Length: 393
Ligand code: NAI
Ligand code: MG
Image (cartoon, rainbow, N blue to C red; front, top):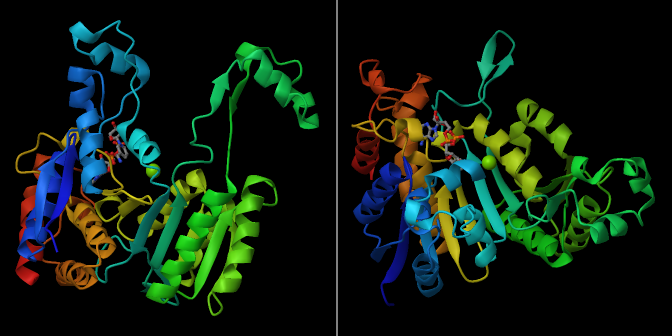
């Protein structure tokens, strides 16, 4: 088989710090690939007026697999102010390159595993009798990535034809007297095909990896049309997966239950916004941003990235302090996707050993406030964490 080519997109800030660490691990396990750099992020917005240049889109179109660090995003006015003088006033508008990438390649499945590593001091614990109990959490969130409340169909002061169309709905009567400029509308659009794809992906994952339940986490009692569509499609698809229980929870109740009995859940499927919320919630139970990995999977292209952002306040620290594990786990998801599951398991096993031993911990694992002082307090730096993982391989 021809050697794989991976498009490496470090992005901004600590994205540039953690991506090379993942590459070191991939090379150490003998994963054979060519790595080509892909430009993305703030630097390219400022210099070129485009945070996701076409050459990067072309690379992803050609090679299909991307590993991505993180980007910096800023509000519209700040973005306009930082544009290079030659580009100002030429109609450039800042768009998040991640959202653009998801939409361009229709990366509609966002997969976010939240699995606790034994011995991680950041794990969720529960009081039990006079002591504490640490329930093992192993949840995989399937978040619809392209539609829902983040689909971008929204207005402040909606145009007259939109307003007229909305007013055909009796419930719009409540807003009849609100002036247009005081009215903001963000639409939540679900399509049946996308609901089916995310639900099916969740069930297939449950079957492949032995999860006993798939939970649809929405709010169909209130958001009847969109959440209702996701749930009714799930009820149909569930019939093809006997032996896997279909549960449904409301997002608000789910946020309560995940702090009470997180170990009861397996695969969770949700729309874009609720998936965003519930995945951050579960990530907080298993170590937070230093551990939260994700995959964005389309029919053709897939991009793997840690959930965290560019953490600009730490980007210039040398040696760097941030935890590379979220990025390395994202690279493991890439290996899973490419069918290299044994290699991915080997890396996850090495991470598990380092965490369980507890000798090498980045500042976040020690609950320290980030800064150059963390090393005096016993924290490992980013490269030392990777070195410890490499030593266990
Ligand atoms: P952030 O995720 O960059 O950082 C929040 C805090 O989490 C950091 O200050 C740090 O304390 C901690 N943290 C993050 N990653 C860590 C790691 N690997 N190890 C240890 N601690 C870690 O989110 P924030 O500060 O809200 O946003 C910073 C920038 O990143 C913004 O411009 C934002 O738009 C962007 N962003 C980009 C994302 C992406 O590229 N996918 C996602 C979230 C934010
Ligand atoms: Mg988020």
